[in-house]
Length: 296
Image 1 (cartoon, one colour):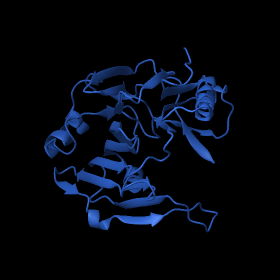
Image 2 (image 1 turned 120 degrees about the horizontal axis):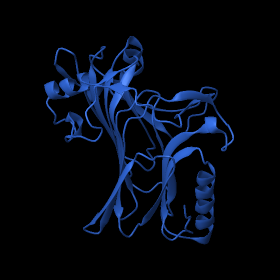
Image 3 (image 1 turned 90 degrees about the vertical axis):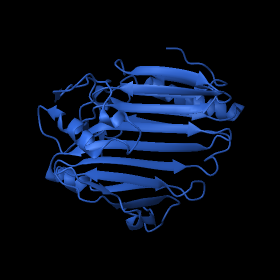
């Protein structure tokens, strides 16, 4: 099996870019930027070498309520630059687990080079159980997916997917990991975690020297935001490499939340230690304040 990795050095392979964190059309609320404005801003982004797709914004928001239920919202804005991009990025999909999550919400619009706007037809979304290629047994995961309209070279796609817990995945808490970077270049990555102050989270960052981190506390909640600038496309690498192998470098964000217990604390601490031991990873770790501290 082949997986993808993020090079140790962020390659700034973009030309003609404004300041990385300057306000852009895709910084406005989802689906509010005029189609012409979004197309104009996307067209201004150029690259030294061609790629199938350029991701302009990769935003992921994780919002916890008082019952520790998670609502995850993923927003992508990208431009299609090749026939391969047309083929590989022509659908929207979301994985979900019906036993504890509500059916995902998928919204998308495609702006074609002529300036016309085409919206995803939610009636075309199809939900089905999943199984591995070598198994006839279906697991409890489902995939909701459907085709994007009018995909063509030069089109700009804005997509937002929301998956909401109806009950927590595990009442005592769980650990989630998010990998930063994609097999295509990403102009900006934003990760936001919004949680009650009664659910404190501790962060650890690894090998993200250019990331901007901000924390705001208000009305009994804390919002932690990580902003990362340009990340070039990831290279392929073999799986199962040792953690101390430089070729195994990759970026990810992980966070842990839930009630404390001796068994869970030991298990979570073991997970954090494993993440820390991977020196060549770009990693953000968030954990319960009730767990043993790990100092950098």
